[in-house]
Length: 276
Image (cartoon, rainbow, N blue to C red):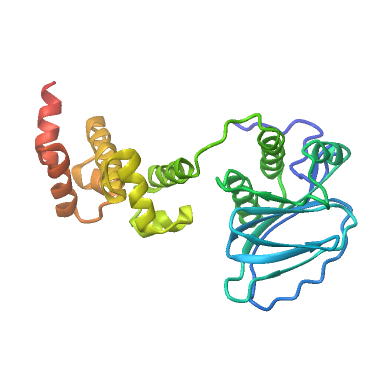
Protein backbone atom coordinates (compact mmCIF):
# COMPACT_ATOMS: atom_id res chain seq x y z
CA UNK A 1 0.00 0.00 0.00
CA UNK A 2 1.33 3.40 -0.92
CA UNK A 3 0.62 6.35 1.36
CA UNK A 4 0.68 9.67 -0.42
CA UNK A 5 2.17 12.66 1.35
CA UNK A 6 -0.46 15.22 2.34
CA UNK A 7 -0.62 18.32 0.21
CA UNK A 8 1.63 21.07 1.48
CA UNK A 9 3.89 18.61 3.33
CA UNK A 10 7.53 19.73 3.42
CA UNK A 11 10.20 17.52 5.01
CA UNK A 12 12.55 20.47 5.33
CA UNK A 13 13.17 21.94 8.76
CA UNK A 14 14.33 25.25 7.26
CA UNK A 15 10.94 26.00 5.69
CA UNK A 16 8.81 26.36 8.81
CA UNK A 17 8.00 29.83 10.10
CA UNK A 18 7.67 29.66 13.90
CA UNK A 19 10.68 27.40 14.53
CA UNK A 20 13.16 26.51 11.79
CA UNK A 21 16.62 25.00 11.57
CA UNK A 22 19.49 26.67 9.72
CA UNK A 23 22.51 24.48 10.39
CA UNK A 24 23.53 21.29 12.17
CA UNK A 25 26.98 19.82 12.54
CA UNK A 26 29.56 17.85 14.44
CA UNK A 27 33.32 18.49 14.42
CA UNK A 28 36.42 17.05 16.00
CA UNK A 29 38.59 20.16 16.14
CA UNK A 30 42.31 20.31 15.45
CA UNK A 31 44.37 21.50 18.45
CA UNK A 32 45.44 24.80 16.89
CA UNK A 33 42.35 25.63 14.89
CA UNK A 34 41.53 29.33 14.67
CA UNK A 35 37.81 29.84 14.02
CA UNK A 36 36.68 33.00 12.23
CA UNK A 37 33.03 33.46 13.15
CA UNK A 38 30.56 35.08 10.79
CA UNK A 39 27.56 36.70 12.54
CA UNK A 40 24.28 34.83 12.09
CA UNK A 41 20.67 35.97 12.00
CA UNK A 42 19.61 33.02 14.12
CA UNK A 43 20.41 31.41 17.49
CA UNK A 44 23.33 28.98 17.65
CA UNK A 45 23.94 26.34 20.34
CA UNK A 46 27.10 24.25 20.66
CA UNK A 47 27.44 21.19 22.90
CA UNK A 48 30.85 19.89 24.01
CA UNK A 49 30.84 16.11 23.51
CA UNK A 50 34.47 15.49 24.46
CA UNK A 51 37.55 17.52 25.32
CA UNK A 52 37.95 21.14 26.30
CA UNK A 53 38.03 24.61 24.78
CA UNK A 54 37.52 28.31 25.42
CA UNK A 55 34.61 30.53 24.43
CA UNK A 56 34.69 34.33 24.65
CA UNK A 57 31.77 36.72 24.19
CA UNK A 58 31.11 40.29 25.37
CA UNK A 59 34.50 40.49 27.00
CA UNK A 60 34.13 37.35 29.13
CA UNK A 61 36.07 34.13 28.52
CA UNK A 62 34.63 30.75 29.54
CA UNK A 63 36.70 27.59 29.89
CA UNK A 64 34.48 24.72 28.81
CA UNK A 65 34.56 20.94 29.01
CA UNK A 66 32.44 17.89 28.19
CA UNK A 67 28.78 18.50 29.01
CA UNK A 68 28.93 22.29 28.57
CA UNK A 69 26.58 23.99 26.11
CA UNK A 70 27.35 27.50 24.88
CA UNK A 71 24.96 29.89 23.20
CA UNK A 72 25.62 32.52 20.52
CA UNK A 73 22.78 35.05 20.00
CA UNK A 74 22.01 36.51 16.58
CA UNK A 75 24.48 39.08 15.22
CA UNK A 76 27.04 38.45 17.98
CA UNK A 77 30.73 37.95 17.11
CA UNK A 78 32.29 35.58 19.68
CA UNK A 79 35.60 33.72 19.52
CA UNK A 80 36.16 30.12 20.48
CA UNK A 81 38.98 27.63 20.12
CA UNK A 82 39.91 24.09 21.19
CA UNK A 83 42.27 23.31 24.05
CA UNK A 84 45.76 22.57 22.62
CA UNK A 85 46.20 19.46 24.77
CA UNK A 86 42.64 18.12 24.78
CA UNK A 87 40.84 19.62 21.75
CA UNK A 88 37.09 19.46 21.97
CA UNK A 89 34.56 17.66 19.83
CA UNK A 90 31.31 19.55 19.64
CA UNK A 91 27.91 19.33 17.99
CA UNK A 92 25.78 22.32 17.13
CA UNK A 93 22.40 23.49 15.90
CA UNK A 94 21.24 26.83 14.52
CA UNK A 95 17.61 27.69 15.40
CA UNK A 96 15.51 30.49 13.91
CA UNK A 97 11.89 31.33 13.21
CA UNK A 98 9.36 33.85 14.49
CA UNK A 99 8.99 32.17 17.91
CA UNK A 100 12.63 31.22 18.50
CA UNK A 101 13.67 34.43 20.27
CA UNK A 102 10.74 34.45 22.71
CA UNK A 103 11.25 30.78 23.56
CA UNK A 104 14.97 31.16 24.13
CA UNK A 105 14.52 34.34 26.17
CA UNK A 106 12.08 32.46 28.41
CA UNK A 107 14.97 30.37 29.74
CA UNK A 108 16.99 33.50 30.44
CA UNK A 109 19.95 32.57 28.31
CA UNK A 110 21.77 35.40 26.57
CA UNK A 111 25.12 36.73 25.46
CA UNK A 112 25.67 37.79 29.08
CA UNK A 113 24.78 34.35 30.44
CA UNK A 114 25.63 32.02 27.54
CA UNK A 115 26.79 28.77 29.17
CA UNK A 116 24.77 25.81 30.43
CA UNK A 117 26.64 23.30 32.60
CA UNK A 118 24.94 19.98 31.83
CA UNK A 119 26.56 17.78 34.49
CA UNK A 120 24.07 14.95 33.98
CA UNK A 121 24.52 14.98 30.16
CA UNK A 122 20.76 15.39 29.72
CA UNK A 123 21.18 17.53 26.61
CA UNK A 124 23.62 15.18 24.88
CA UNK A 125 20.98 12.84 23.35
CA UNK A 126 19.30 15.80 21.60
CA UNK A 127 22.54 17.01 20.01
CA UNK A 128 23.61 13.45 19.17
CA UNK A 129 20.24 12.83 17.52
CA UNK A 130 20.46 16.03 15.50
CA UNK A 131 24.00 15.41 14.28
CA UNK A 132 23.45 11.72 13.52
CA UNK A 133 20.26 12.33 11.54
CA UNK A 134 21.75 15.20 9.58
CA UNK A 135 24.99 13.38 8.76
CA UNK A 136 23.08 10.24 7.79
CA UNK A 137 20.66 11.93 5.38
CA UNK A 138 22.45 15.14 4.48
CA UNK A 139 19.47 17.36 5.19
CA UNK A 140 17.62 19.00 8.07
CA UNK A 141 14.35 17.07 8.04
CA UNK A 142 11.36 17.00 10.37
CA UNK A 143 13.05 14.50 12.65
CA UNK A 144 15.79 17.09 13.22
CA UNK A 145 13.16 19.74 13.89
CA UNK A 146 11.53 17.43 16.44
CA UNK A 147 14.85 16.89 18.22
CA UNK A 148 15.43 20.64 18.32
CA UNK A 149 11.97 21.20 19.82
CA UNK A 150 12.66 18.55 22.45
CA UNK A 151 15.93 20.31 23.24
CA UNK A 152 14.13 23.64 23.70
CA UNK A 153 11.44 21.94 25.75
CA UNK A 154 14.03 20.46 28.08
CA UNK A 155 15.67 23.87 28.48
CA UNK A 156 12.34 25.39 29.50
CA UNK A 157 11.63 22.65 32.04
CA UNK A 158 15.11 21.87 33.30
CA UNK A 159 16.47 25.38 33.64
CA UNK A 160 13.32 26.57 35.39
CA UNK A 161 13.70 23.77 37.90
CA UNK A 162 10.49 22.03 36.82
CA UNK A 163 12.23 18.66 36.66
CA UNK A 164 13.80 16.86 39.59
CA UNK A 165 17.54 17.07 39.93
CA UNK A 166 19.04 13.76 38.85
CA UNK A 167 22.05 12.21 40.51
CA UNK A 168 24.92 12.28 37.94
CA UNK A 169 25.94 8.80 39.08
CA UNK A 170 22.50 7.41 38.31
CA UNK A 171 22.49 9.29 34.99
CA UNK A 172 25.77 7.63 34.01
CA UNK A 173 24.47 4.24 35.12
CA UNK A 174 21.25 4.69 33.15
CA UNK A 175 23.18 5.67 30.02
CA UNK A 176 25.35 2.57 30.39
CA UNK A 177 22.34 0.28 30.85
CA UNK A 178 20.61 1.78 27.83
CA UNK A 179 23.74 1.32 25.72
CA UNK A 180 24.01 -2.32 26.80
CA UNK A 181 20.31 -3.01 26.20
CA UNK A 182 20.51 -1.45 22.74
CA UNK A 183 23.76 -3.12 21.69
CA UNK A 184 24.05 -6.47 23.55
CA UNK A 185 23.78 -8.37 20.25
CA UNK A 186 27.04 -6.84 19.03
CA UNK A 187 30.57 -7.73 20.27
CA UNK A 188 30.70 -4.79 22.69
CA UNK A 189 33.10 -4.70 25.64
CA UNK A 190 33.06 -2.97 29.02
CA UNK A 191 35.50 -0.44 27.56
CA UNK A 192 33.01 0.32 24.78
CA UNK A 193 30.25 0.96 27.30
CA UNK A 194 32.44 3.24 29.43
CA UNK A 195 33.63 5.18 26.38
CA UNK A 196 30.05 5.78 25.25
CA UNK A 197 29.09 7.10 28.68
CA UNK A 198 32.25 9.20 28.92
CA UNK A 199 33.71 7.75 32.12
CA UNK A 200 36.43 5.21 32.95
CA UNK A 201 35.74 1.49 32.99
CA UNK A 202 36.77 1.28 36.66
CA UNK A 203 34.39 4.07 37.67
CA UNK A 204 31.59 2.47 35.68
CA UNK A 205 32.21 -0.86 37.38
CA UNK A 206 31.99 0.83 40.79
CA UNK A 207 28.62 2.31 39.81
CA UNK A 208 27.29 -1.12 38.81
CA UNK A 209 28.55 -2.65 42.07
CA UNK A 210 26.95 0.15 44.13
CA UNK A 211 23.57 0.24 42.36
CA UNK A 212 23.17 -3.20 40.75
CA UNK A 213 25.29 -5.39 43.02
CA UNK A 214 27.34 -6.73 40.12
CA UNK A 215 30.11 -5.74 37.73
CA UNK A 216 29.52 -4.13 34.34
CA UNK A 217 30.53 -7.39 32.65
CA UNK A 218 28.11 -9.37 34.79
CA UNK A 219 25.28 -7.00 33.87
CA UNK A 220 26.13 -7.38 30.18
CA UNK A 221 26.09 -11.17 30.53
CA UNK A 222 22.79 -10.99 32.44
CA UNK A 223 21.15 -8.99 29.63
CA UNK A 224 22.48 -11.37 26.98
CA UNK A 225 21.38 -14.46 28.88
CA UNK A 226 17.87 -13.13 29.54
CA UNK A 227 17.53 -12.18 25.88
CA UNK A 228 18.83 -15.60 24.81
CA UNK A 229 16.26 -17.34 26.99
CA UNK A 230 13.47 -15.23 25.49
CA UNK A 231 14.67 -16.05 21.98
CA UNK A 232 14.83 -19.78 22.71
CA UNK A 233 11.37 -19.77 24.30
CA UNK A 234 9.93 -18.34 21.10
CA UNK A 235 10.78 -21.61 19.33
CA UNK A 236 11.58 -19.70 16.15
CA UNK A 237 15.36 -20.00 16.24
CA UNK A 238 18.04 -22.64 16.61
CA UNK A 239 20.50 -22.57 19.50
CA UNK A 240 23.31 -21.23 17.31
CA UNK A 241 21.05 -18.46 16.03
CA UNK A 242 19.98 -17.56 19.56
CA UNK A 243 23.63 -17.31 20.54
CA UNK A 244 24.52 -15.02 17.66
CA UNK A 245 21.44 -12.86 18.31
CA UNK A 246 22.61 -12.52 21.91
CA UNK A 247 26.14 -11.42 21.04
CA UNK A 248 28.00 -14.74 20.86
CA UNK A 249 29.59 -15.85 17.59
CA UNK A 250 31.12 -18.93 19.22
CA UNK A 251 28.42 -21.51 20.06
CA UNK A 252 30.59 -23.26 22.68
CA UNK A 253 31.20 -19.97 24.48
CA UNK A 254 27.48 -19.22 24.33
CA UNK A 255 26.56 -22.65 25.74
CA UNK A 256 29.11 -22.30 28.53
CA UNK A 257 27.83 -18.86 29.56
CA UNK A 258 24.23 -20.05 29.30
CA UNK A 259 24.89 -23.02 31.60
CA UNK A 260 26.62 -20.78 34.17
CA UNK A 261 23.71 -18.36 34.23
CA UNK A 262 20.67 -20.63 33.86
CA UNK A 263 22.09 -23.82 35.41
CA UNK A 264 21.39 -25.88 32.28
CA UNK A 265 22.73 -25.94 28.74
CA UNK A 266 20.57 -24.39 25.96
CA UNK A 267 19.33 -27.76 24.68
CA UNK A 268 18.23 -28.85 28.16
CA UNK A 269 16.60 -25.47 28.67
CA UNK A 270 14.59 -26.02 25.48
CA UNK A 271 13.51 -29.51 26.60
CA UNK A 272 12.31 -28.20 29.97
CA UNK A 273 10.45 -25.34 28.31
CA UNK A 274 8.71 -27.67 25.87
CA UNK A 275 7.33 -29.76 28.76
CA UNK A 276 5.73 -26.78 30.50
